[in-house]
Image (cartoon, rainbow, N blue to C red; front, side, top):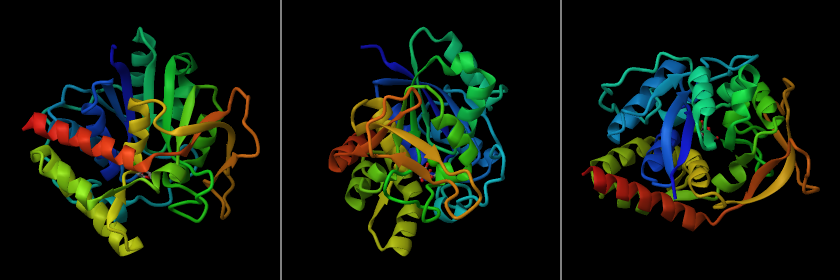
Length: 316
Ligand code: RIB
Ligand code: CA
């Protein structure tokens, strides 16, 4: 079966890095383009990090196009260096890539790819959804060519991780999130309800760390996440939110989903960035999204660990 064309829109970001490596380890998808956004750290840093992660895996051939440096309406209140490290990759200084950033703005590169593709393209958005919102507004004819939009973000019933109400990617740009969730693109929402229970423990990390230098580097990048989890939550594992979203992009149906109406709180009060998921009914609205509500977490973790181990072993 031919590999599905894939674009990842990302703000690397420790779990973004794992998600990119997972995509490169998966024959079901063909990573055609990486677009970067502000989010965990500033755009210049997320873009440099994307280039370096691709180079780490020997795939500096994949183009990287830089997108939004800031949220649509109100500036993101703060970055997440305290979680991802000052440079966004847990303090690990990866070798620079020989590749240059694609000169096209992310939205242009994405629109051109979508319009030129013979087959439906999966787009995985694992940072703030600013670039996706800009694509919808600037090139609606291209957005209509998205085969599947897999969004990491939001929460149906698990509250938030940045505030009591809001998950980071939605909190960073609620207006963009409202625009994206109000579109009619086939969309899967992978939120905290399924990511938080899916914990990568130290045993899993040790497995891919032992598989080769790429695995050892991925483990080193994760160390900051581990330290943050231990000091903040007293846990000995990490939630690699973005890697679970990519698992769903790579293996559709991994997550149990229900079509729901979802709205975003774009007010500037305590609930700003909250995703209000209507779980009273299964929706038949054209703007409903497939909200991930169930997950086999051990199976998802095994998928990630085995794929990363294979990649590390292949790269030697
Ligand atoms: O809430 C989790 C999301 O916020 C992930 O995309 C992680 O990279 C952070 O950006
Ligand atoms: Ca991210």
